[in-house]
Amino acid sequence: MSIRPLLVSTFVVAGLLSAQEAAPTPAVFTVETGAKVPLSLINGVSTKHSAEGDRVYLETVFPVMASGRIVIPVGSYVAGTVTQIKKPGRVKGRGELYVRFDSLTLPNGVTRDFHGRIDAMDGNGPNELDRAEGKVRSEGNKAGDARTIGEVAVAGASIGAIAGGAATGTYGMGAGIGAAAGATAGMIGVLSSRGPDAVLARGSTLEMVLDRPITFTENELNFGNLQAPRNPIVPEAAADKGHSTVPVPRRK
Image 1: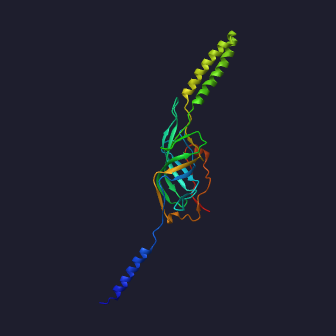
Image 2: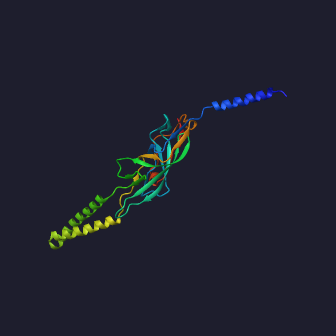
Image 3: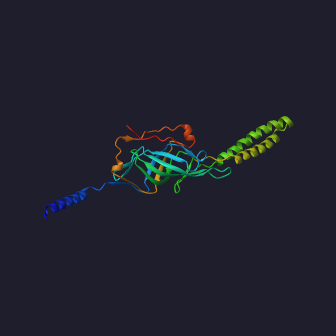
């Protein structure tokens, strides 16, 4: 039996093993837990128009890097869900809504499921943010309630003064009675109306914080000439109903 075929086979196997050992390990890029991702809201949500289970759509407005590489480019899409709605009370209690972020889609279509929450939002808005839970609360309205009662009381005093003076010639008594009636009417109005709603308006800037790491390989970060369209337009009617039209990434 010739040993030549055995030697050839041995060299082939050894060559294959050497090639496998020499093949570089694909690079892995990880966005760690606690990373913050700036987002812009595509469709608005509120305690007035939205319901639990409604979808929320956003896009990234600033690139996120890992190991010196842009991992989440501008124009990536984030989808979330309204998980809790509490409407404002008539006497006390603020409107509350909670949004959970569920998935990230890069401009090339690579998608990752994850968990994230709101960590910061526009400072110019009236809402308040519970950063520990990512819950948005509406502003209180004590000043507005007091103003409503006062305005109606003043109007009642004026009407009472005119009516009382015309009937009896005594304007002071009519004004006092009118003021009391006006204050009562104002209080009834306050008790029958709800406070301000919690609102995240379309175009608002939010900062999302990741509750778990997201990992990508080198091949998944090949964006080529793909780019998501900027400033997507959502019809006002759709935005008011809590729905959205999400644009599809396109080529330049």
